[in-house]
Length: 376
Image 1: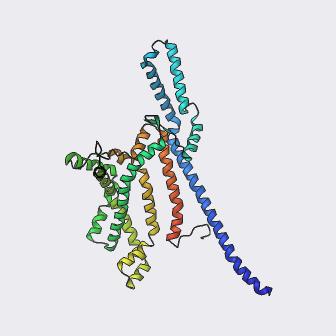
Image 2: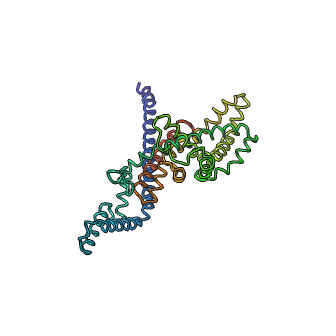
Image 3: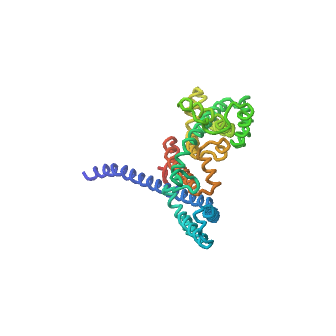
């Protein structure tokens, strides 16, 4: 009797044991990836802090600015005219010391850099050193939230239009390899080596300065339209030139890359076999070409979505677009370290999370990809 029950018990215990060991390996893999990505973010953010502060040289610049501003303030204030030169000098030194203490400049940069790192990683972004509001210095969080919507609107339209149009055109060209349109678009691919801001300058000269069809820059007309429809139409009119410049700077090269990618997969043996079986062109593209390339398409699309948050520093500056890119440009010029670090750390977190989730998305859409050290 015991010899008959024993194999049954082993048969029931083995799947449970395999399932628990597989779950443990997946949890170990998740933990390892999270730790590795977090360390990458820490290194990247700390390097940003060092670069933004020029290794502490910005402290000397800020001390000079504080000394110059307070000295001029004391000299211009008529209430201090009755003070002796020694008393005025003492008052100036005390005010400079108070301001340096408020900004933390009385501590070595090596110590403050790690405090900056801790605050950045915990998203305690602090206040801007130069951008002010009615209540004083402006919080970096509010600056980012204020500048983020214009960036998402402009680059959301530009990047999504660029991604899907180049994907569709590349797929169409892969069907007509060697045709006139194929050769024409591939021949235009070197045009994408020029940055968007360069095209933007010429587009402004032609359509704004010469023809006067479109505005020079900005987000809406000044004063802004009072009606919602008028505001949307004004916004769309101001978006034409930057979107067109962004498309020109990338679309031909993107088409070339995706078209080559689709041609490689179109020459696989299983595709030729499907053609011999009489599979229709549309079904061939959907099941035999797009399906194997889906991980690559998802990766490109994920980085397109991340790119919406970064904006473009020079392009936004050329078109005077009030987005994150322009805020980043002004922050760098004004040595506004909290703003630079704040924008960078959010971007770094988004990149890390994207890399983390892409591993599991690959495993869902492609059975050839396995998650875990043992291929489970």
